[in-house]
Length: 266
Image 1 (cartoon, helix red, strand yellow):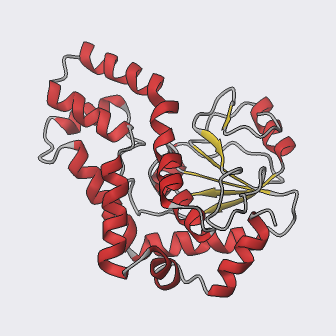
Image 2 (spheres, rainbow, N blue to C red; image 1 turned 60 degrees about the vertical axis):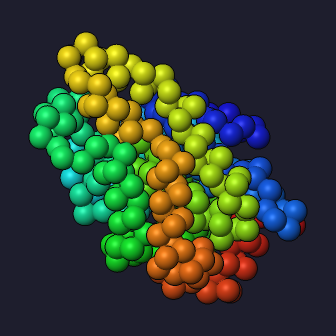
Image 3 (cartoon, rainbow, N blue to C red; image 1 turned 90 degrees about the horizontal axis):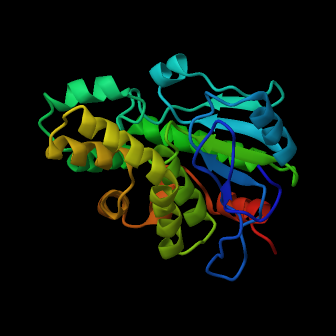
């Protein structure tokens, strides 16, 4: 993991590690580099990877996974990084943590296709009280990160859904345009493409039907449809993103101003 103005960060045993630095806000400011990174699982990090986190300045590790996911694959992080477990869902509604065998078995009995299932998960993420609490505490961590040389890392299993929405909420609070936020969200597909293809090839070899292959792809990817469903749910229930941040995530105008001071260049 290099200390450069690089969007995608490479790890030996981790994936979907990305900087949120460099994005432009509507008023012409820029999100600072090396202050916030979004990632997939930290369960398999090597000693070298863990040292990379220290070198990068990571001081907080926010884990959005469910209790079961954490028990099955705990984060491998250095002791001096402050760990915060903030489960967005009681169970992993995104199915990102299911093994190939578990998913294959479930697909044989599932009524809903993968796309509809994911849209429902995103809608839940916007309206469920547990999700609100998790993201409120995520923002509390961000507001607590007052040392300019400290980085907040946040993640789930694939680093795409719960993490993707966490990034969307933060970038929205910082005044980054929605078009840019959506591009950051969809960047996951480019990064995870080799993993997805590998999984689909295996599933095909296992004799999975075309419908089930589509579902696996839907569960392992992100989609404009998921993002748009979340935004539509926000509009329907709260009126706007700023109202959602204020009402559901309890961010005051003062909090928003503090976030901008901490994470934007002036």
